[in-house]
Length: 210
Image 1: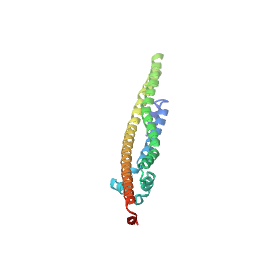
Image 2: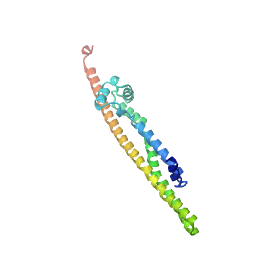
Image 3: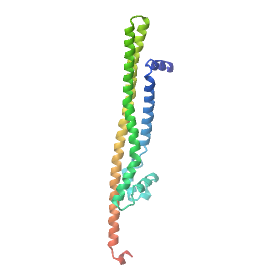
């Protein structure tokens, strides 16, 4: 079976080599991206857990505790909280955006490389037609037609799972962005509550504070 697959693959011509390279790189990039996105913080707990953790970061799971303290969950200044959240976004956003852009490019490159095989296969076919009739010419035409049809089919078959990975990664990115916006609003609300509480304590008479 393996020999049959290899023979069929070779009939596609030299274009099958870059097509195989694009395919391997696309799947490696896509699977790595999915693996990293599945570990993003919004999968560390439920919505109720995060609300409880924002109120008391020391009670949070270890990884969530580090994230919340980095995001300023214990701060009272809203400006500081928003600045820290911007830094947290930079930890997760740019690297995955680059991988997603690379994955999208590889998905688009698969069918294009297949079309290159169509062009080279048609050239082989036209060359055989120009040389005239005969058994060898017929074989050359058959080889040219095979090179013209097989690579674009493989390119499309490669692109379909790649499109599914791109769709999943984009949806996952939107979910995570919504989670960060929601978490930032919770931390900001908590910072306001701490500031108001501190203001009320400072307004009390000295004897009451004591």
